[in-house]
Image (cartoon, rainbow, N blue to C red; front, side, top):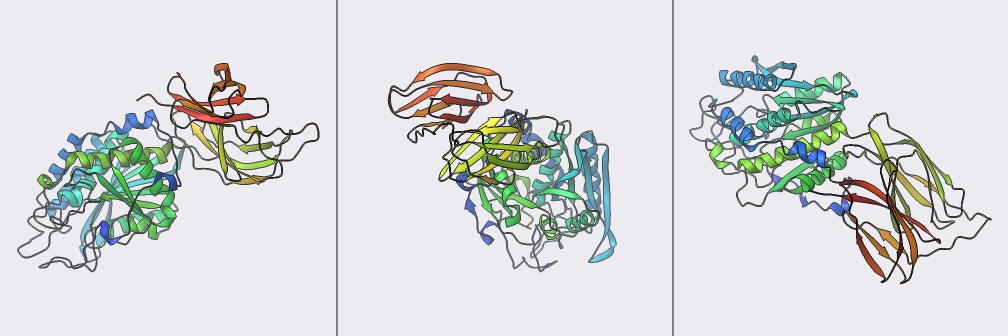
Length: 494
């Protein structure tokens, strides 16, 4: 990891940096801008990450003895990284060269590997980490020995392993893997790439930076996720993925500083974040002792699983519905919502979220026009929609629209404010209302096929009913005559 001002020799840098240099909080899902369901597909891909592979890459990088920017061995390391990308089956692997600003006769090489997207290849996710290393202090000689196992053999290994896992996985969007050069003297490699991408008008949706992801000493697997506030949605998404698919405990920060390779992307207006060990490796940072023996490789592999899941999600999630229009519906207390579907051909349905007063409800539909009933006339309703596909990827929510249901003359609305119906946890339904309330329960899958239909009488004020359904997403309707209540049901079998 780079710090500045840069001190090339003789003393330990005076501007140490680590998680305590920023304000981190343990991620609270209740405040998340991104709420996503569990996807068996994503889990199956992240499970392909191998800690044996991660450890082998780190050891090989360490065995170059040094990857200091002005040595022959850093060139050899770049050639090895390029060969690894090619061994995974990638056709587009190349060096992006540039003169080192501090020594223009020294030509540096970013190693770039491109995985083209299949549907919207012009939209890009960048996954990167620097591969150069350095040591400081009395007796240190970076020309001879700068092992850099954690800083940043670990992050480079994360980039390589993510590339290996995703090599044969179809993605809608393009993923570009980059091992950056000359980070330790001033983020020169990532600055070169980010400036070039901006000059080309490249549409980078997110840059994921891995820098020092291998050190953990207390068996409490915190991971630091940081970026800027403009990238908060992606930071929260990363934290959600950590919760769903790893044993990591995410700590988030929506502020950052210019000391690693995500910064030049933020400076060019892109969304970017960094994944980093939360227990910062001060004892070995930029020292001769930064070797693989001081690292916990299973922990590093968990961070790579997080990076892989995040990249896969951003690369495959559908776009949100557009052109939302909400108007009073055909019956009292109803809203007609219409929208334009996203361009992805594999979209299977939509999750509609609507809020009236302090109550928020959702429904699942496969239609692009839906009537929402059971609302209170005269009270505005805020509505959003997001799309989901067959693999369980959800779009970001659409922009919200507001409409006010009306009272229709044909008949009064018979409100039953004491009735409640929801899916409080995967695979169960909760009914709450007066004892003796009767109604019919119907459960549909996302294609609209009826899976359950039965009548129901509340024998107590709160009744929890388990659903014996295959894993998947369903929506349920409880018709009690005075109200039609809807909720989404997610069934998980892990």
